[in-house]
Structures are given as structure tokens and as C-alpha cells.
Length: 388
Length: 228
Image (cartoon, rainbow over the protein chains, first blue to last red):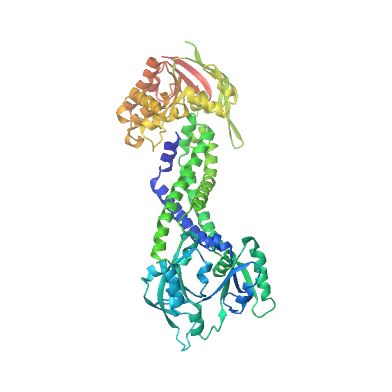
């Protein structure tokens, strides 16, 4: 610690160069913080204690293929099944096609399957009693300024009514609240409508179901139950694929994009560039201090001390920039989430991201400082003082 | 007075590519404790090489060097660094101060290698600066000081850990006459009043007049000894 002022002073010997390098490091770690939040957000989807006990059954062919409603009764009779519900994707947009709403047509018992979604008993009753009723997530309601009693027009991107119009109207009868914002933030974005109303109104459905959700009596039996459900439709024209909610969510996300690969590739390129950039800075910084390093060694600093000081300087450079970058990401993420009106529900930079980030800062710092530190350690005092 | 430096049959050969250059040939030299020795000679005569060997910055190719009874030619790199930190103060022609540190911090540098507390380091550096007459410039950076002042800071740095030996390589080579005389006066005071042994390389006969004795080197051999 007693060398800290010396390391600090050496780091800021050329202020402009150091500040420019710091800006690059800040930008890299800001990007890391934001992208890691996106990756975490995708990874957390479907990961909850309740989710572990839920199975999703969809078409084996594609998630846009539907299944017959008659399958529900058969699934209910599978040993180990506690509860079965179903839903369809509605694909609604509000006012503008860009205002996509996560809207689902759901069976009356759908919310029994999701205890992590809070809704009052009176609102549930109103939903069951109102054919055109809708339950709206609190973030979604906040985003568009909806409240109970409002009549909300939605345009389905897929389903027309019997007159051929894709314009639908729903009455908001209740507000949904996710009790666990970390893993259930998605529920705050949902728009639920009655499956019966949906099925009666569009000629395109005719008793078909998008997917089934099953609660098992014993989590440890989930795999066996999933196989038994899929066996019901084996060799039929509607073969199914049943997975845990987490696997189904991951599979669905993967059909959108392999977020882990994208984030990894971007960060790999960013950190590689950072390695070259800050490596060059450190090489220059040490080269122009050759005579100063020679003086330190002359007055008795050991070669190891010199090596440690140069390494400390490069790690300090990375840690300074990295911590500021991650702190900025922590500050920006809530603003991005609220600025998106709840469309993006990114988790803030968590402990794991901080630990990974700090590890990367130390690793890059050591890599960047290794060569100049080695050169400084091996510096010959007489040659350096003579300017050779 | 006892002997502080004892050099026997010292030689130094540098290898420059495939070429071997013998810079010092069989030097024998004794410097008494409290002496002020000036080394003179033309460029390339081996003055700085001899000074570097006395200061433990380089190792000889042959012969022996004892300083304060310690055979420094037998020490490894780490032990030699420790020895330099404790026993020798260095003064260079171009001061070689850390440009980003204040005068006070520059003077404190050798004390970072000791177990002294931060407060004690500050106190000793302040005393050293006072001794060279720059107590009021402690907070200034080298770029804010004149050449003479910078050299006095470097002398403060050289004496702050209270070494017995000061090795000075052309300490006035970059100074005007007045500043040079101030610096030489300071070195003489350190020699006379504080008992420091000074070995100084110089081209300047006026600077050599401050020494007790002057030795001339020519082509790596001690040519002449002049007592003051």
C-alpha cells in the first residue's frame, strides 16, 4: 500500500492518454454490464420454484402449431398430474404495430397454475364473468395508462374475428402483480383474455389450443410425467413435446436468438480490442519511463518490486475503468427499463456480474501489464541510465 | 580514518555484439572514510564505469570491490539492491527526479524501502530538504524548480536514508556556474560536517577543487593522483 501513491502518480503521468484509455475501458465494461444483464434476464426466465413443478406441452413440430382441446382430459388422467390448463398466443398490438402486447387467451383455471401472480378474488370473478374481460399486468397498465373499467382496443397480428376484422376490444377488469419481480417480471407485462371468447370469436381456432401447462404432484416425477404426456400423442398428427417450464422458455428464447453466444461473441471482440489498446498504452507508458525505472532500481527497489508496481499500475487502470463502467451500467439499466415503459425488464448488475467483471478486470490488467512489467524487471540500470 | 572503499585488480569488460571492450584495467584504489574524491579524465576513460562499480550498479569482470568491509562484487542482484538502498546515495547529472512527484515525495522514495511509518518518512524527508535549503519548495514538482534546485532535491534524496557513501556522476554538468557552486558547496558541507564519503566524477577542474583528492583516469587506467 505504501507504493500506491507512486503507482497512482505513474498511471496519471500522461493524463490525456490515461483518460482516453480509461474511457475505452469504461465503455467496454458498460457494454459488458448491459449485455450481461440481458443474458441474465434470459437465463432467469422460467427459473422459479413454482416453475420447476410446471410442464409445458406444445407441438413437437413448432410452437406455432396448435393441439386439440380434447388432449386436456387425457393429460389430466396421467398419473402424477395435479392440474392442467391451456392457453393460446393472441399477438395483440395497441394503437401501433410497434406497441406489441404479450397477450394470451387463457382457460378459466389458468391463474390457479401461477400462484406467483397476485390478483384479487373480486377481479378474478369479474374476469370469469365478463366475456370480453381482460387482466392486465401492472407494468403494461402503467405503460399505456390503462385502469380497471377501461375498454382497450387491440389489433391481433394473427387472428381476425368472424367478420374478418383484426380489431378486438377488451374490458380491463383487473390488474396482475408479479410477486417475485426477479423471476416473474414477465407477468407484469401480460395481457390475459378469456380463451372461450377468443375461440368463439375467431374462425381460425376452432377448439385448438396453443399449449398446455401441467402442474405435477411431485417435482421429482416431472420427467416421467412429461414422457407419459408425450406418449398420449405418439404417432398422431399432433405429436407433442413436453418440457419443464425452464427448458421450454430456454427453447423458445433460443428460437429467437442464442443470447449467450451473441453476448459472448460481442464481449470477446470488445475485450480483445481492449487488450490491444490498453496493452499499447502500458507499453508506451513504461517505455517512456525507462530512466525513472532505472533510478528506482538504482536507489534500491528490487526487480520484483518494479515488476509488481507495473502490474499494479495496469490492474489499477483496468479496475478504475471497469468499476466506473459497471457502476454506470447499474445506473443506466433501471433507466432503460423504465424508459422502455416496461417492455424491457432487465435485472440490475448483480453480484455474479460484479464478481465476473472484477475477475475480468484483474485478468486483463495482468495480461496487459505482463510484458511491460517483465521488461521493467529485466531493465539493466547502467544501460538505461546511459540511454542505451 | 579507516578505509571505506578498497578496490583490488579491478577490471571491466563490456561485450558489444561480438566485440569485447575492456573499459577498466587492473585498477587498485583505496578511499578513506570521510574522503572527498574527484575522478577526472577524458570521455571514454572509464570514470562512470568505475563509479557504477563503486555504487554497486554493475559488477566487475575481474578483481574485487569492498565497501565498508563488504565484498559487493560477490553479492547477487537482490542483495546488491538492498545494499545500495542502505549504504549509498546517488546524485546524477540530470537529477533524475520523478516528474510526477513533489520534491517531498521524491525525497521520500528511498525511505519506502524501510519499515518507517508514513509520518516518520515525511519527517525525515522534510529534514533532508531543510538541509539542502529547500524546505519551502517541498510541495513543488521538479518542473516547477530550477536546475540547481532540482539537483539539491536529488542530493536530499541521496542523503535521506543516511548512507555513508555518496556517488555523484557529473553533478554540476548541467548547471550554471552559480548553481554548480551551490551544489558543490553542499556536497563539501555533507562531507565535512556530516562525515559523508563522496566519490564524484567530473570534467570540471573547478568542481574537482572541492575534493580532497583528484584521480585521473585515462583509457581505463588510473594515471595520476593529485592531493588537494
